[in-house]
Length: 271
Ligand SMILES: C[S@@+](CC[C@H](N)C(=O)[O-])C[C@H]1O[C@@H](n2cnc3c(N)ncnc32)[C@H](O)[C@@H]1O
Image 1: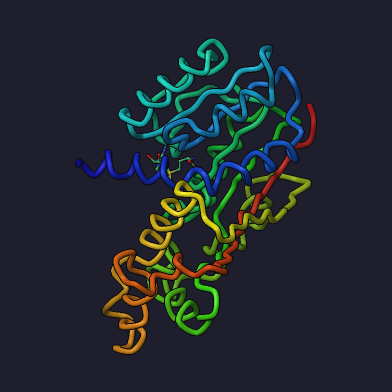
Image 2 (image 1 turned 45 degrees about the vertical axis):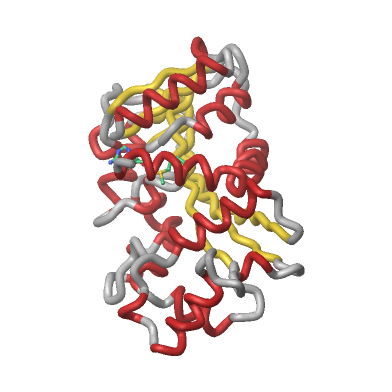
């Protein structure tokens, strides 16, 4: 399997955790029917489908992504869903969007723009450039999780590793952490800047789909952590977080976990 294939698989396999939350986020946005939007870093187009449903047949959603393979997949699911006329997909870089100024009523980016490495202001300004007066920029980030019930110290140690705080890095300016995003929006000239937190949760008995999603999530969340853990934590991590272990945490009959997405939204004054 290539790196792109396994990335695509990870987007698909974790979607059952993410999708119910994304549906609630899209509903809460109350996007104007008939509006035109852009999904930045749309991946395989899973949220383009939800956004297109929200703006209805008179609206349009464009998905942009760096990966041509993801876009091919996105086009195929749009076709299967019978909404090819309401959506389009284009290869491109969010740092240099191939669109005119004021091309969209809103811009959405989930699990992408909020994690961009480096100085966020040029990117925020670029997203803002393509939004019409009166429009808004919406950025969703995965902001927390509690996946190891009963093991708060191990989970805290895992969350304190480089992987646990990525894409932030120890020693980086605090303003660069995604939780300071309201400031990024304001510095890019947006007004009415708001944030809302949406939680997802799961509990035993886990369906096969949710079990696979959580297994992939645990694997993705704390990557290459061994060198940063004590011997004791590493042993506990292997016992609780490896699917082949008899004590794999998802085997708990009373397993419960939750996670949050933070939705930052900034609007521009009308024309
Ligand atoms: C974690 S995935 C999220 C996909 C989708 N938004 C979702 O939440 O399911 C991040 C996506 O951002 C894309 N991406 C990363 N950097 C990008 C850039 N500079 N411009 C456009 N897309 C980018 C990646 O190719 C990938 O598809």
